[in-house]
Amino acid sequence: MNPIICIAGPTASGKTTLAVSLAKALDGEVISCDSMQVYKGMDIGTAKPTPEEMQGVPHYMLSVAEPTEDFSVSRYCEMASPILDDILSRGKTAIICGGTGLYMDSLIQGNAFAPFPSTGVRETLEARADREGIEPLLAELNAIDPEAAARLHPSDRKRILRALEVYLETGETITAHNHRTQEVPPKYRPLWLGLDFADRQELYDRIDLRVEKMLEMGLIEEIKTLLASGISPKCTAMQAIGYKEFVTALNGQGNIAYAADEVRKSSRHYAKRQLTWFRRNKAIHYLLRTPGMGDEEIFACARQVLREFDN
Image (cartoon, rainbow, N blue to C red; front, side, top):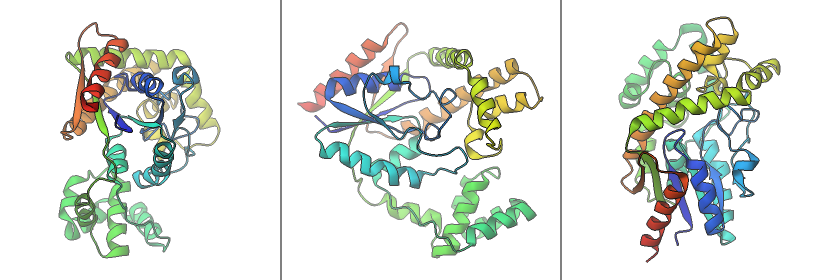
């Protein structure tokens, strides 16, 4: 049996349920791979698994950062890699479960990330962006690293500044750095499982139902509590789908019903992007959920894949 199993798939596809079922069957422990479930106090809107849903299975990388922090893929790998190694050292099965493809790929690859030095370069870039806007900085990035500039949208201020910072600190473009690290063989060799739907509408229906349940569970109250604690609506965590839309409504720019519709639409678009990302990984064995198929049948399909690769 492969000691590492990665479960990938779009939002609301049933990844957590499958991860817990496999963990119970294989003496496993789960490492969450979700860029928003890392934040404390953001439980309902990120669909963070509840203690009941965990069913006693240890879960890691949940609620490990303050909402005021700018979490990153490098920090995720720095924290999650020792956890993964510890699970393996104890003879357990490590189940990495989530929908943040960049985090999952980087953890498995064992990427060495460019450093985050404290020399004042980042602060200078931030100040320039505040004063001049992001466009001149994006133009500078285009001059030194046109591939990165073409890949980044002008609204992605964080990554534009990061790319410039890497170049100014190291003399190497972030594109060159990424190409170099991608040439290194992966640190881990997991068995990949992916969740997808024969009928895309079924996924969309599950997303709609999840938004409804989040509201019933008290998502609006959760957001109000975060804002009341002093969390800025502009911080990275509050830009997550399911938060920024309702923050806008709470600020009087729209209403809750309209915001809920926006969350449904944004979640559908996000699911499409997730599927596009994961489909680049040819190692993924997809478990296709057909109409009427329940979680137990998905679990049975996963066990069949595991048996085939255990022989």
